[in-house]
Length: 374
Picture 1: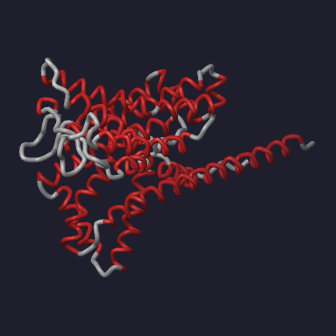
Picture 2 (picture 1 turned 120 degrees about the horizontal axis):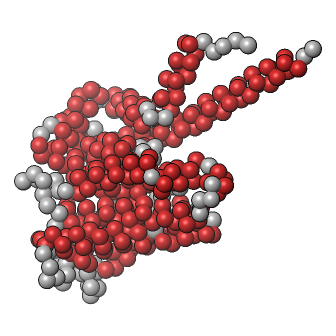
Picture 3 (picture 1 turned 90 degrees about the horizontal axis):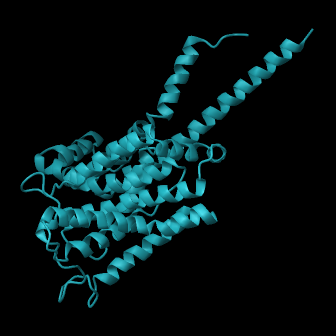
């Protein structure tokens, strides 16, 4: 039997690397390449456009702060999406979870309490965490115990949360600011607001919370029993059941925790940036967070990179429009292309592995046939 050549083995490993850990990087590269073609077709210089994009997102301290501020909710909510992906679940309810968390944080943040400011702020963040988790109860239960698609249920829950928040900030509801021109809550008590990291900017500690949680979840998934069960459920649910993992309970727990991370994203926006709850304040950040989780391929550390990448696109889009005349929606095109390429590379990975397994099976059958010949 011929042994596989070293050259074939090398290229096989390269392709495996591109399909696994390098998938997000390859997707970003391809998205930027295709976007460069589109920018060129629009009559602008792609290199100049990308230079302006970088200048607008990392060219100054204020630009860097803006990038990190925009990345904060994407990282927190994207982490919830990524955690669910590890268990083979697609959580598209991040938008609703952000609103639910914002409601919880606002309810605590505008209520005077005879406690130190740091404790009041902690309670507001915890309220957002709990509210986001509660928002995952319905999709979690229906998926785990009734087999209903979490995609459909979590998507429908988004609209309920959005309009519940809208209802609560309209007079005479309890979270509404009296005589306000635009529906909003009263301002958050100053002591409850997340501390600013750079004076004169909006950069707050939400970005630190997001990064630390991503690192913590990465190690939890890799080195704990909970992480092993989560990855096993996502890889092979039959094997997980054979290993005596309580599938229904674990699926519900993962969805609840993922939803709670989305709630923290709502706290980041309300306590760190907006400083009150506005009607329709999120503007689709939750849906962008789903794209972040997909681009990261479910890897918590990849969520940090993907979140910062998407944050830089949003922060630098205006500069790109000013310098080369490319409209800001081009940043959304790049985001969409990233997701499409990630999905496409995923299909390519499965086809490659299936081809390898089929080739190996044919080789084994030939060896067996040769062995039984007299």
